[in-house]
Structures are given as structure tokens and as C-alpha cells.
Length: 311
Image (cartoon, rainbow, N blue to C red; front, side, top):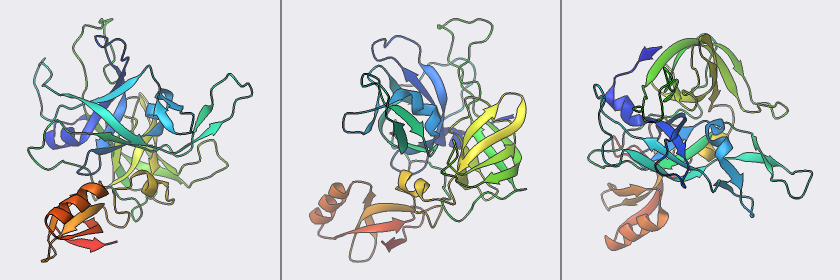
């Protein structure tokens, strides 16, 4: 593995933690990795990273358990030595979307058992500032499936905040972004009859605990999957890929599945076909369009070039 010191990638790839809301002075517990996928704060991770914190509400909706909260640690620059955390470095979870199954318990008093069916989850985590456009990794949901023999690179936070030398809970936080490249050795299609029904691929790379949920990039620089399983000291890891089924398109709804650097959004378009506003909230887009007497459209748009296609 190689230590990654790129500030831009640190702005896009985040370590995530859980903590007890009843013990605000307690030390958060490292869960894994998430990464930003669009300009509005949406992030991708692996479902199993957050699975133990979820339960079903009375109406069958996924929700966080009452005794747990989740946050990402945002440190966009590269710091030397031990430094205090900047203000608002802890970024709270403001929403999430995932699909799963549930098993009805045999006894009435027992809770339903959640089943991981997709190994994908979308988290909404706002940025602490808006001094520049939100940096995000381009996602290839359809047209760039992994191929046996190609070289891919995984990113994440291995051994996230693991205590060393019997250090106590008052030790400084330890979180380092690493990357590790490897060859795709097997591509496994989705199989509803499997205990892991999602499509996945094995890579000859070391992606240990803490890197789970991190992005896997191909040679073109596009994310083609998320890290799912790996073991310390073993160059045999597994990732879930996006192509080959439509679950990734439902989970990451802001991404245009046909183009890796375009986003689906509500946009206010002026009479010269320029995008004046673009976002994920339809009411906000309609209000902007009405105020400026222009048209609201549902579009696929490139923030880099400003070109758009109506959907």
C-alpha cells in the first residue's frame, strides 16, 4: 500500500465514524471509508459498513438506531504532526439511501433481521465550506465494467484509528489515506440465489479493514466499484461493481448512468440556454425559475462545461 498525500483526493475520500449520542465526550469508533460523488454532498460507501447501525421503522423504512450516530471526518489538507481539528471537521450524516431485504423473525418480540442485498449505500454529508465547487469522483455506472486482467486502484483508510502500543482513548486520532493497485483476477455477475447476490470482482491487492466502502478506480480515473472485503497482509480483495445491474442507478440517483462526469438534476435554464441554477431539490429549482421568469427542466448536465440535455 502507498500513503496518499494528495489534498484533492483527501477532499473527496473521507473516513467515517460512529458515536453514542448519549456520550458526546466519548471517542468515536472508526467504521470505514466513503467518497463524494456529486456537487451536493452525496457520498458512496459499502452497505456492510453501516449495516449494524440500521433498523427498520414501523412503516418498513431504514433508519439509524436510536443509540448511534454517524459522522465523517473532513480534513482536506495535509497536516504534519499532531494538529487540532478544524472547526466543523466532524460532518454529520443528514440523509442516506440504501436497499436491503429483511427476514421476519420467528417470535413476535424479536426485531426483523436486515439482509444485505446490494452492498451499496448513498450517504448525504455536507461540506464544511463552499469556497470552491464540491470536489467529487466521477462514477461509471454502466459502460465501464471491470475486465479480468485490467489494473484497478482502491483507496481508503486501513486500520482506521486502531490503537497501537496499548494507547488509551485520549490518544490523537489516527487516519491516513492509502491506495493500492492490483490486477482483476475474477469478475462475478449478480446472482439472486447467492448469499452475496450483488455483482463483484476479485483483485490481487491488499485492501484491509477500514478501506471498506472506498472507491475503486480504473485506468481512466473513473470509479467502477466500492471496496467490499479484504484482509490485512493478503493480496486478495473484493469490490462490488456498478455495471451489470440497475441497483447502482437507483442508489446513486444524481449520477447520469450514461456518462461518468454528468449529473441528473433540476435546473433553471434562461432564454439563452444557460444553466442559472442546478440542484437536487425540485421545489428550490422551481422557485428560482419562477423568481427569474425562466424555465425549470430536468436535465443531465456537466458542471465543468455547462452543457445540458433535457431528460
